[in-house]
Amino acid sequence: MRKDAQANAAISILDEFLDGQNLNIIFSNWTKNNRYAGSSDRESIRNIVFDILRVKKTFTSVLEKEKQPINGRALVFLYSVYYRLNLNEIFTGQKYGPVKLTNFEKEFSKLSNENINECFGITDNIPDFLTAEFKRSLGKNFRNAMRLLERRAPISIRVNPLKSDVSSILECLSSEGMKGKKSKTVRYGINITGNPRRLTQIQAFKDGCFEVQDLHSQKTIEDLPVNEHTKVLDYCAGAGGKILSIACSLKGNGKFYIHDIDERKLKEANLRAERAGVKFKRLEAKNLQKYCCSFDYIIADVPCSGSGAWRRNPQQKWRITPESLNEILTRQTVILDEAKDLLKKNGYIYYITCSLLKIENEEVIQKFLIDNKYFRLVNKKNVTIDNYGDGFFCAVLQKKN
Image (cartoon, rainbow, N blue to C red; front, side, top):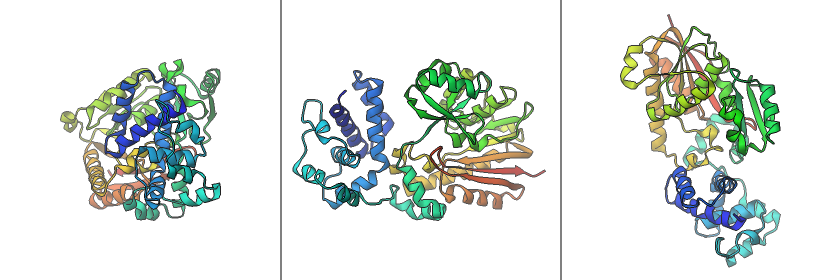
């Protein structure tokens, strides 16, 4: 596909998103209806859409100031100006491309670089209702976090020591035309620094030698002091990334259990476990009471706003509302209350979010400790969003004897 055709596809996808449709469904439908598009075309279109959504508030503020309609075309035009792209290659007016530039677009594109920078200005690309909470939560780190959330997320992998090692995977990546650098902070982590697109297509991935996982996600549970005799439950397992990391670090020697309110998600967790060479036991909701006071460690990687990973999923920040955030906060409290009864005495809950907000992190823990005097806070850590990984929070809670 030519650049103009890719831009036109991005315009149609953004129009549907602005109409309130789910972005993942939009992409899925577009792919089904445009089977001629190759993987590189799909990636390019996805990058355009995600780059725009990361800074959508900046672009919409310009359009509002200039009294222009907010639609997919206007956003793609501003994106093209913002990144100094060749407008004549994009707005061609040809069969598969956007129509040629309007008079407003022609005049706007004539602005000097200095005037364009001033026009775009500095905008916090987060929902208005959360600005004060972000500032309260992040303090002096607020501005840096805002800049990072506007950029593409870094790509990293976790090596499976059951099947390989960091040095071997680095050599493998190089032979496949990719570049990686060993993490200085995570034992089995590699930061992908070049050509990550083929990661999940190479044989080493298919053989379970590594998984794609954010470095900071790995860091939250890397030091969990488990051994082959401990029973570990991932209570909100989803696709099982965190318990898979633990199981692989023990080379499969342990007792690992998974649970999720949406049991369909656990199919992916089991597929990943099979690929990695480990096994999980699945706990169905109807059988949870049988496991009262059974586990040494419970990972509660709870549903959250996802604000620490919004650069990876920028559509999330434009869908969250005060009402949906309150529902999330309630769910976080309920999960802790459910998990505590499954824990042995002297056992530990690892409460984890990928949120930057205190209301989902420290304040949830504070409330839990007030309501449950037989628990104590062992430690907590905020893993700051940076150039290597997303933002996470982890609190370790112990059930007293």
